Image (cartoon, rainbow, N blue to C red; front, side, top):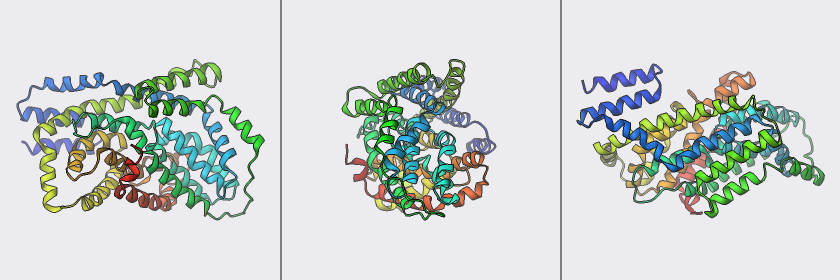
Length: 425
């Protein structure tokens, strides 16, 4: 019977049962096996409501969806083009930076592909870049913003890690700082690759135009203060992450609905509904995963796994290599939110035993997982881009291969050079 139940749960998961139901059932079975009152499940789920920082997730998500439905993507492309377009390969670099910044605030790379793809792919093609490069760049760069604040995966990792009573505290503010250099390294590597790309019909890059730069600045006058105030306030300690999320949501709501009037009052409920669908999925999985995490900790499962691994892996270098391979495979099968709430409670205690800093683990975990967005078979970005650009999935897979290998090299650097993640703390 003890073997049959996990087998049934695995088959249900493979058959497409909602992930939260499989996690909840496994936790309930575990508690039942250890004669723990099953009311503990309700207590653990209720505990989610008592996390002050968790309010940041729905607020940042709502703000991101508002930005996605407004004309902010067009303004973001315009201002980055005005200030970066004069560089060699400028338009491609503009695309990378714009996608990364937009994903950081929306928290969803798919939204970035839909919102910016229609602007960037035709512009890149007009500038003479090859179609395969254009598709690969937009499909790939949608996930670059996951390491930049106020990325939802960064916040979620911090929430999960804080529930594990580690000796080394994991604050979301520190995670925001830790992602800056690794995320910048990824952007730099892809920017160099983009600058070296040949063009089918070479066009001289435009020079810096002061008039256009000033016009772009005025056009984005309402958006420019947002990252400065929000991130500056967080990093300076002036306000907490949850307060920053509230300010962001309120500010974006006022600007998009009342000042710019790009989202009508009739359309607003639909934007709210769509954003809260994502939030509901995340919070539901998180709630049942907390119960599952507590069961695993009480049962000593991480310690048992560590003892088994230690018999075969004696040093941190090898462990990190195996972890990288594991995360690449995991990213092919699970979306990043599910992977965080399911795997971090297992991986984090083991990594700490090997002397890996929890903040560093969070950054390398997300850096690895973001590759999964454009890696088959799940590769969400591949399917979104396939639908958006009307291209076969395999065409997009081939287009993203050069980007994948470049980012894989940067991921290995991030993994084995922890100073990149910890230098600013």
